[in-house]
Length: 364
Image (cartoon, rainbow, N blue to C red; front, side, top):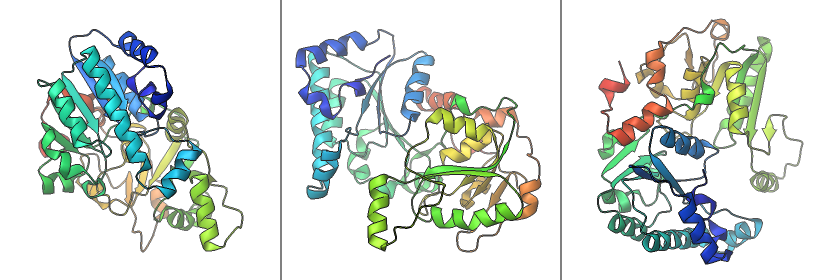
């Protein structure tokens, strides 16, 4: 099924208006409960969420708050820092116009992050959908979302993946999830250690320290550290270093399915969360579903019900030490019931069905 994001992004303004509005009507479903899913661009997870909402019996339409950007947009953004925000606001106005004229209503407005959403946009959505339940899921640190406090009062419920933020700001705590592709089916583990992620903060430096340990212990590994081409070039110019990058530095993002296959083939995953982040990453939950052990910098993991010292090694960013015995130990099985708590289905049921969540449900 096509979604609003297909035709409500930046290039919507050069499309024929009549054709666009006809598409809107033709792609709408007629189920009893309708969800408007507003999301950011984050790999393919937004599509998995959309599909699972539909699978659970809801009619779902989508709107991506992030405009698609070409090279020209990126150049303009450097000269005019609010360029992307202006594009996003225009998209929001266009979307509201479509809803008003076609009288499309929703039972749930489900927002992930919502960093670029204006208060005016949310208020107009609320006016058009007075009986809808407005739900936000904060998939980042609250401190890193500029308009969080501006829009906070719009939502009926706000969930956070970060326990500390949930406690500090009175939000509902709900960890992230794993997609069905990451379920283990007795897959062969032929990769010793695997890492995939963006090149940010101290990730590169920590991976450089881990590699010699793995080589010394004759552990195979595959790292895919994604660096944007322009950002990488900028860093090279800044440092005056144009030497060849390590083999694990990549300029392409791994498709979700390929990432899942590599995860399921790996005995151990590496997780290096952003230094300011306390919530568990997707990688951590995917290690659980894939029955892979984990090496992580996130000390808060000891508070979760699936923590086992045989499966999870916590490392210090400042004094990195990896016990060779951990690399050799077999995986300690976790109950299927515990694993299922972190499935995408359960995550969505908690959010849309209003199932209780919190320490008594998520933790032992």
